[in-house]
Image: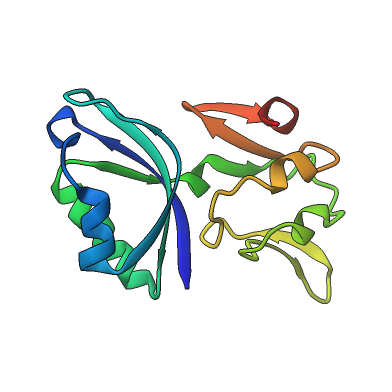
Length: 147
């Protein structure tokens, strides 16, 4: 199962379109709406987790959305690690279900693979030195402000 969290920004012309229904029906995608600000005839924003049996399902669904004028961005692109602050304790690896944070063996270095990151944010509050950060509205926020 392939799962990623996305930020969708859609123009007011699409606010009355059943695009979630089509993602499910035509692209076989499961979804979890995390947050949504949707009003008829206004621009909307939605944070949504999309799950598909393959990566292709989700990417095809995203192409469909882009064809409607919806701007898509992976939420994972908004999570980063401050390598200077990280002291490789590995606390984050215990909460990372996507295995985007993992130990590289035999060196035992903690690696952050942004491509695997789903953007769930569980690593942000768990980091004892606040090396994990999340960006909201293009402003980087330290973990203590996020929780």
